[in-house]
Image (cartoon, rainbow, N blue to C red; front, top):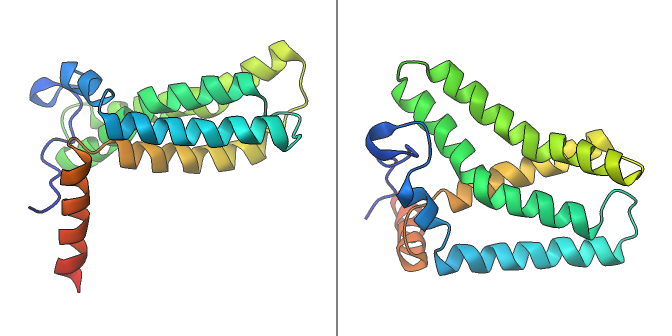
Amino acid sequence: MPISTERLDTGAGGGFLPDRGYIAELARPWKLLSLAIGMGWLLFGALNYGISDWDVGISILMGGLTYVFAPWSVGTILAAIRRRPRGWILRIVTALFVAWIVVDGIYVLYHTMMGNEMFRIENFYASSALYLLAGSIWLYRGSLREFLTNVRDLFRSTV
């Protein structure tokens, strides 16, 4: 079973906004487990690395918002580029704006309120890459078994 991009849209019938299926996908056990592992790493870093702009609060905020919004952002961008629906540029700009809010906007707002020193550009680079990576992984609609089967088949077909 090859990896399909048929369902990259986030809403019913190719809609722009997330549908019930998107919300249900967030409850898949393998996605929740990967979120827990990632949050564990973020919280470990917040408690042990001693970096002034990396604390428990920002880890929970950015990690949680990434889980909710990154698959939508990545899926919206991919679907807009692939299908070019009416207003496709606006869809891409909106998805990038949501990503910016999660990656940088929340960061600046939180640390301004907390009075913490900020390493804004460094955070932007690291968080943007993690946001897009997480969104690409969590975008998959299916079970862990289906995901691993598709990845295995993909590598077999390229060799």
